[in-house]
Image (cartoon, rainbow, N blue to C red; front, side, top):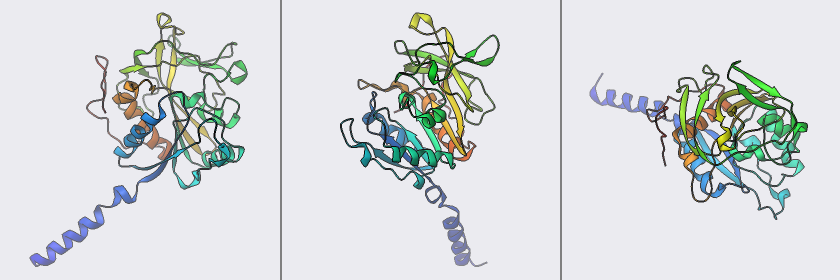
Length: 297
């Protein structure tokens, strides 16, 4: 083959072989606009983390404030493969709730981040999606407490009465994998040190089709339950897959919890799994171990 022809063939092969990250990127939507946490400061970073995988193109849908007209908030969920909630605020309109339910039920992927599990205590389908929630008047009527019993090495569903949702002062804590073969956590350290965060405990809810991937111990000296509380979870809702991370507090200009490489990587992997049912991302070399926290911008 002549040199000029060989070069032309190679160029064509390169052009055919390179598209794909952008052309094949999956469309994702982050919902924000109200939250008791710093959604304005964190949404850009959640967007950046998703886009850094090369798997997603990300839009943002922002609701009116809590005095605004929520009927005007009508995202076209069906345009997307993935919806991420960075939202904790006023109820969406019934029309928007139904549209979101249909999106997930028909196979759409959903990721709930931290205080998003405080949202919508009176929306049954949403609580089925997230599996467990806190605050908002949640109680034994919302479903059982769920926690990991270390001696029995299994998840416990406790129907005892009491409030749903609490946490002590922010602190660093260990996250421990409970389902090491699940694609989201496969290959990660079985135990790793998470940056200073709110350690949610006493979460309760329908807990249907719930898999607890990882937990953290909430010690009584930190106003906790002395139990291993769910931090990373999955559920299914109809044909849809849901990844729920209780990690990721941000406020007062600080967002160490979301800078933690453990948070970033599990968020990225959870998003991919929610859409595809598998994870192709490699474990990064800066993933934390048990000796120290690992942070990124």
